[in-house]
Structure formats: structure tokens, C-alpha cells
Length: 194
Ligand code: IMP
Ligand code: MG
Image 1 (cartoon, helix red, strand yellow):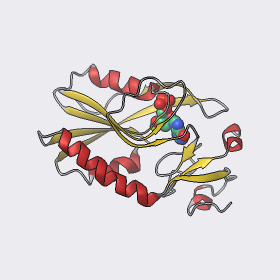
Image 2 (cartoon, protein in one colour):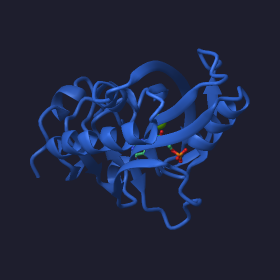
Image 3 (cartoon, rainbow, N blue to C red):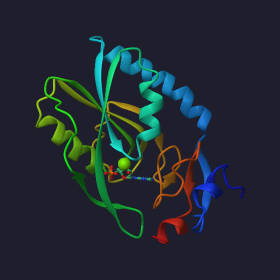
Image 4 (cartoon, rainbow, N blue to C red):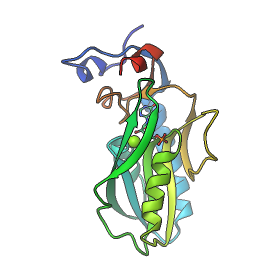
């Protein structure tokens, strides 16, 4: 199978993971971001929003979404470390350092690349709630259809995707694939390499 443009560059110096099918083409992401931005703008008539992005996966999503929002937007970030086992399953998550800004009284929208088990977003939402924001909602680009998923706690969702390991548009495997323009699935073997 042909590798999507950009993968060879992403994997320079290491062995490229086996790439399967394109799950969401880059052009489709851009179209959906226009719709998502409109949904978000309608949900915040006050015209002010603080986007709290979970780094690094949400980097491109944050940048492209923020530039489509017609309101006053503040940007802040949080780093979450998750531990993944050989099967590319997250085994836990912790916030690295502290939230950068005081979020009390703010309309906060947490922005993340993907909702998988939900443990990352639960953790971040708890940290935000402890600062007593005016509101706290969640926006994810992707939501995986896991059989064991918790009740979905995302208020805005770009795409529902199958329960496969994906890279591209900010998502990575061991640093690989973040800069791909499409979101692509890795084969099972690629996950087992970790
Ligand atoms: P959760 O805590 O299980 O919901 O996992 C969310 C985090 O795990 C995301 O923010 C990603 O960083 C990472 N993750 C989960 N699934 C994938 C994937 O398919 N590709 C890349 N990263 C993933
Ligand atoms: Mg992440």
C-alpha cells in the first residue's frame, strides 16, 4: 500500500510504522472544522472563550479551530502524560506541571485530539473544575467507538471513528506521524512494536 505523503519524512532516522487506510482525509478535516466552529460559536453567545488544549496531540486542531472562531479567544495549554502498553492502549494519565492560567470565572473549552477511554479528559476536566470556571465543555476532533467506552463526555465531536490506532494531524505513535495531513490507521503490527 502507498504511504500517505509526509510519512517517510516523519519517520526519518527510524523504521516507518505500517500504515493502513486513510480514516479521515485532510480536506474533510478542514470542512468539518468550519462546521464545528459554527456549532461552537452558536453555543457561546457571550462572545468570549478560553480554549485549553491538551498538548501535543491537539496542536494542529487547536490552531485550525481557533482561527475559525469569530469571538474573542484566549489560548492556554496543558500537558498530559499517558502511559501506553504494547498494544497502544493508555494505561493511565497524569498532568505534567500545573494549568498555565487562572481559569476561574472563564468559559473554558477543553480541546483534545481524541477521546479514547476518556481518562485524559476526565483528569483535565477535574483540574479545570477545581478552579471554578463559569463553564467547562469538551471538544475533540476524534471519538473512538470503543466497546468499553464511558458515557461520552464530549460536547463537540469532529468525527466518530472505529476503534483503531490512528496517527496524523497531530496524533502520533512514539513521535511518528504527527505531521501527516490525513488521519490514517496503523496496522495491528505497528502497535505491537512499542
Ligand atoms: P484516553 O485518555 O484513553 O481518552 O486517551 C486519550 C489520549 O490518548 C489522547 O489524548 C491521545 O494522546 C492518546 N491516544 C488515544 N488513542 C490514540 C490513537 O489512536 N492515536 C494516537 N494517540 C491516541
Ligand atoms: Mg493527547
